[in-house]
Image (cartoon, rainbow, N blue to C red):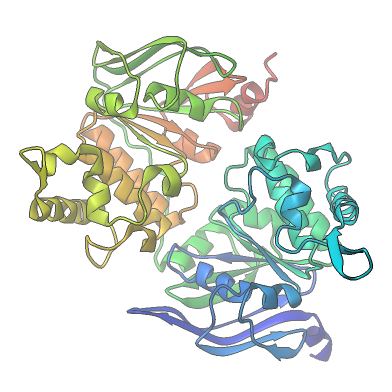
Length: 508
């Protein structure tokens, strides 16, 4: 028993945290062992984020005990956490885009050297560069990228720079919150290798992810949370995905993706010869009523740029967009709305919703004229009634329609954005990563809402980096590579191997 206790790096006992009207954590206990990957899973609202924010020093626990290497500690801020060897890489990017990697790694804790005796100090840029290069070489052999603004680097290198930043404070535990968000499939495999490297060096990882398949590649043990409590901690060899899902949601979910079969109607959307210099090359496709069409491709292939061009969010040099057989000149998202096209963007917090506004304000904003009197005065009561109807229809979990969207879980934020676009009465809905960062229960609800839309005659165009999701929902799949469509698969023809061959340029 003593030997096992020596392997415990962090021990949480009876952790409880309350917010006004909400018991976020109730008597949570878990251990993190030295050099292990402990996965933390649960639906949105299960308490995962609150728990890692307590360990990171962003929240203070109300009760319970935290022990680090056997010593009882209080974590009252992020500096306390770092001093205890705990570093966190949050889901939302935390790097300053205009700064270089070296500047980001030491931002706010720059190394200083004496200048003119001890009276003045100057930044020791050489020491900061040397240490950043030393850590970065654990992952990549060359270091030229460290001296470019991180905005010029791809998502994988940005993730690695965040890992380097965590290691630079000599951490023994790295908390990773959805680290593979925005990474393509092949980039995820590279990141997994980096995580295994950290583990081999004795660093412990707390790994938070909604992608359950990842856990069985990486984790040693898995802790399941539900309703602010830890349900179980199990070795990965002793469970499977279906059991995890059942523990997470408290009920059986026999099939995660059920394809709805809908007879196709007339052509709802046709895009012809869409071009944007250096980005998109001769993009042409169509979507019929009742049809779900997928776009597959690696990061940087032009998927998001394609749908942004379709809705007028990015300029184009040439191309044509037709809805229900009628040509439209779409120069802005407002033009797209009037044509009957809605886009649920990849980054819901920055582009999809105004999170400081209420649920009702978000739902009506894209068609605000419909709740204005004489095009000037907001009919507040009508707006609330419309919002309450959507909350009921879509199963949005919120105490009331005046609640700010930022207080909702990721899945419920996504439903609010969907309600916003449904309120515009669209003919075509475009989903860019519709289930990114939401839990398995909320994913199924989103799938059902997409199915209901196409059953009612809508047409759907969908981008997803999750190939099982894309293949499970789509009737046809277009594959992108280097800014152009290189192949079209029917539902029957599409396999992960076939899609990846074309997405990675293997067909060339």
